[in-house]
Image 1 (tube, one colour):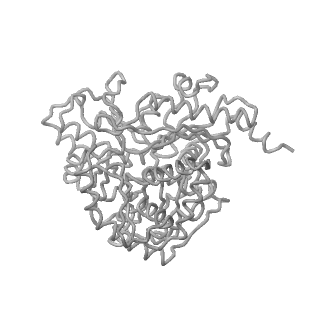
Image 2 (spheres, rainbow, N blue to C red):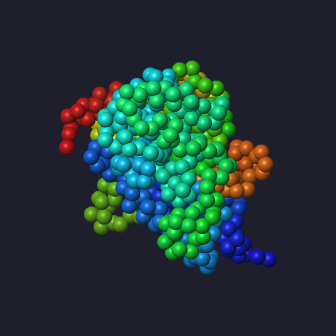
Image 3 (cartoon, rainbow, N blue to C red):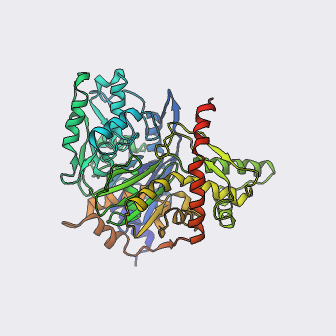
Length: 536
């Protein structure tokens, strides 16, 4: 009888595997899975965005070297654990942070540095497009960046031949195909649910808006092709194989599924593509995705309308700032510990400090903080200033300090979710959460359950997150049955034997979060004053 090691080695040799690579805001991660969707090997690369010339960006060198480093670490893990050289893979998929702005000329030259989702420099364009389309266009969407560049009369606009996102760029680089998965495309430009393509009437409206600028392109000319989950979107080219694998062992010709955004991979990784389901993805940013039974009654600037990877409508609440300030404070505590002569491992630091939250007052003891490293559309701020605020009457202790920073990480998210649940009466059976925060059990789930007042589950796959979800989309393309829908594939194959841990809202926490969020809303004037007066 073959050992598990031997079975996996054989699967690797035969290419009975799928690879997902996701470009997150702080880490690029590669996850290789077998035919049973279990993780075989993982590689990663840490990186950070930079603020250059007024724009948050990552440079092309970091994008490519990070891709190679994450793949290389995964490949070396395969060689070390299974004693086999990785030469082929059954299917591959690439995903990344949604939205943003990458534009190229006809030679493939990047015309301006990559402008990420984090930029809030497109308020005029986003507001105008929302008015014209009668459809919410957030500031971070690609079409808002494009129109703002037109309005600003930026020199590069006349030379645009192609516009895409980071996921679309990686896919194009390695396959030669200008294509996006529908979920990722829905963060560039509105999608028509009936055609599963860009909204034609809105494309026409946009072209009419820019007529006076006499540009040498129309919008349809420069947008990527839209593809649905399950379709093949190209193959790994010879150049792409050499670029991805610096060891030159990986062979070209591997089928690649449509590239998706981290929102889409989060839905897949948490099995939340059916109606009345939802998920929360937690990292440097945080967003919730709720699959709707029916359209919303109004257009809300706080709510994005996007789609699942197979085209179902989704209400998305996207918040630019989540864990950055919390991580910065934990870094400070690490420095203190080291100064006292105690070296603390990262996992232990997070576990100890986050568990202090469970000892805190329900409302955080009257403390207040804003982890705004950048602007926040939901609360109307174009820039951010991280702040911590307390009064002489606040109950200032470590437990309340940590709870306040977790509460504020989800503060803007709650404001958006309250619109869905309290104004639109959207029904949600439960939320599935994923992201590194949930490696520490209970705490993160407990806080999100309090914020949304719904049960929150975390699956065993939460640690591998979106990269694992992207590998699942690649698997779906390769081995789905005729007519098998993505939600059925996930239910009946991927998650059939996967148990999640569910936490239900604690009423004291729910009431405590409500008191905190009122304090949070009133204190926004302090944050706005900090943006106006604290200038470096």
